[in-house]
Image 1 (tube, rainbow over the protein chains, first blue to last red):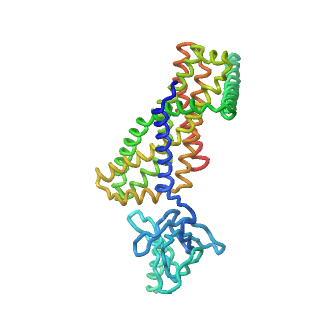
Image 2: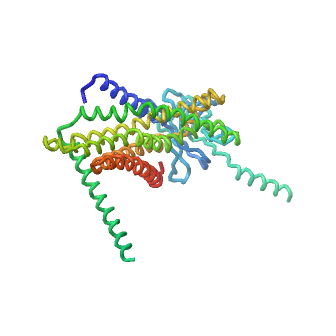
Image 3: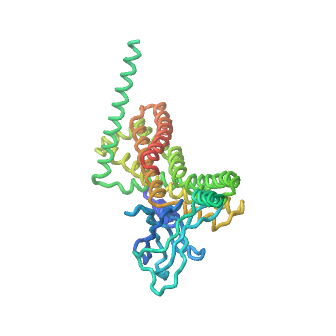
Length: 152
Length: 258
């Protein structure tokens, strides 16, 4: 085949478009971020995370400020959740983390409730005040128990 | 009775030998491709054939697949009042399954069949023998660039297919069905994790690309040097290639859960 500059240009364009699509899928859709980009990583231990999973949103006052980047078990057999927050965020160190449910299908997310302390959360810090996910089974169990106690 | 058993045995032995010949063939063109000299120009030409010329069908199919996924997903999710999860459904289905598989099937039909037919015609018209006469190894000059171009183009085409399909789903879901744009993107991006979904999608498309490259070049290279041989090589490529893609798709999903 004859060498053709137009053909080479089109091949280059194709490769660029393909790599661009891959990059878009990786960074935007897949949510892979450049590490060490001033990201704030904090931890929080919960008794029960319910349906919380990787990439569940983290919000303050309903505004999304980060994502759950991992859920694992710690040595006390509690669920240790890794929160990846916006690096520019200044959250008081005594803030509380709650697991709440949004929507009909019950997608769960972490809501941070800012405390009043002057110290701010640094990367690697642990959020002490946590509130577990609401489990309907447990709620019903408690309700039935209370009802039973009253009757006696 | 004895004849039947003999024939079964013969078939089994023949199948093993066929695999062996395929292995030798693959080893030959991989070695030819790795060792200098590198056929950059030949590779570029093949990438044009496989990649650039497949772009139109990939992009158009992506758009329509995304659109129909959004339509089907919307009507079924709406029964549970869960239209908000449309982005997650469209995105996950596309990235994990439909993207790699449909791209591989389309490329098998569009490019791999043409590749097999071209090589088989070269066998029939003794062009490969002509190359050998000039002490040019056909594995190095013809087969390697074709196989490499197929393996390189597949993940790129897959990514383009998925992006176009996500866009197609967006057009139908948001512009036509009136879903909230932010909700579509949030549920899409929230559902897809790079390490599981995107990496798995790329892995699948790379495996499919290599698979189809091997099948197409081998079928063409071992074609009978007749008109019927060329058509048999082309048909064989499409049939074997499509089935192999689907079987490997199941195997990869079952083994690694992607």
